[in-house]
Amino acid sequence: MKDSLSLDEKFISNIFQKYSKAKIILQNEGIKDADALQEKAISYGQDSTELSQLIDYQRYLQLIETILALMPKAEYTCLIKEFLAEDAKAWWKKHYSQDTYQKLKHKAITRFLYLFLI
Image (cartoon, rainbow, N blue to C red; front, side, top):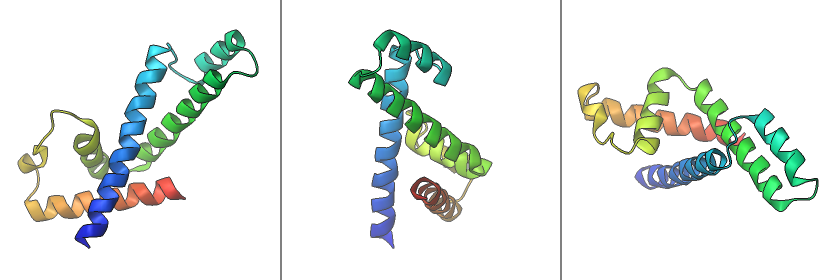
């Protein structure tokens, strides 16, 4: 069980690293939403690999943000603070016991991966 959880943690960590990278790239390009991407498409032309990468990043962002929006608040907070926040080490000690936190984290990871993989 521990090994599968650590593999799940590595997998979800990679998902969130790609999410962060996509978010930064789109911010650097000045793209805040799909409409801005459509406007950018006009300047790139039809057959641009750079445009296709930006579209893929935008879709990935939408996918991850949709999954996070579907998560219950406690699980959402757990995932965000565990995998996206840089300064939130041991944040859970104020709110949960070790056992409760581990159960919450496992449940959050399981739910996220289920939604991500379907």
